[in-house]
Length: 489
Image (cartoon, rainbow, N blue to C red; front, top):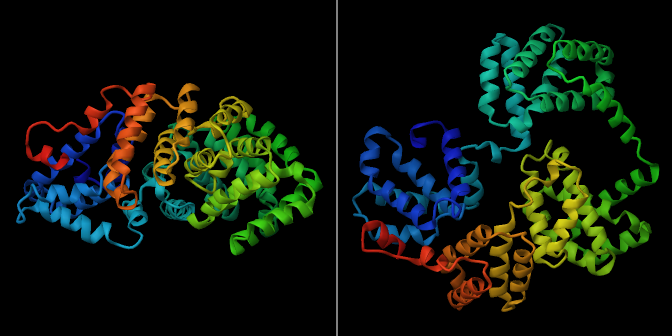
């Protein structure tokens, strides 16, 4: 069905498959499903002219998302006639998509799924949408476009930009307020997103007033109107006052933040860890270590993988030299508390933060028990705590791979503690072990005994109760020789 729909539905289908993988749909079933699609490719092209290319994208995306092993392509080819469209699909996936430079990033962005659109791109889409609405005045069409963006968590940007247009262009005022009112009344934009949009606009009022002297007066007239009409929560006026007080942080802290930003930028350029540590010691404000950690990762989040890796590598060095475990815990707690604000500029902030946490556990900067300690420091219902379970299967996978690479079974102790504390469930263990098994052919290229180690770890995990006794048979079982089963053997 997704093949015959828009890119948005194709992206949603790919994301759904990744979410269902191992938890609901087994790896064998995923393979069988793709084999069935490949076998039906000749029929699919009758109704969907671009079926070969679309299906090739789905196969390549599944490999990138690690729900199909790379070896699937070569195995599936052996079961299909070379003249079939299914064979052509696999060739296209391999040569046109999986062999391209930076293919993973390109495939993830191919259908411009909302979770992969950059903040800059999304802001441009919203700006264009509102400009078109100003020209047409079609509220229904504007609401439809907002809905199609598929970023309900980013609707505050729609609110903020609508308010900016409202004060910039006098003629836009009735239109923008009408759009916000209708979007709120039909539940398209939630109350919290409306409030957040107003709050963000209020934060930038001083700068806006330099160009539009009447901006504050206009905004002061909008707020009571929106509250009286019922689409802006009355709590906004109270929260905005509290936010203003919170922004008056002490001069010493503010100056420290400015100085460490410079230090971090220099580190990203030089990759000189000893120099960074010396700079922090020279500041003589080690009580602000948690603030440094927060600033380091926040800056890395908005940069490339190189800087993210540099930030992760730096943490163990800081932990050894000048950071206590309490500093690390408090720094991550501060990060998670502010995750919602970070997401204003970095859409996948919660996912990235989860990966930083996972890496900190793998690198022994944190122990699993520290995760509970971090969670206990968060305010109730804090959005920063969302996603903390996201990385548990990733911890399992990385721990097993690291144990193979370093020939050090100490990683199993980490998994034991995680399991005993209930931080990693049997389902999460199963998914992590399954992901390792699915990538064994590739791992064996660098680690010759990877398959033997995987079998040993699986047996060990079953004895310890991390995995169900049936785990091995569910993953490796290969019933009678149908085409689909041949692919799995």
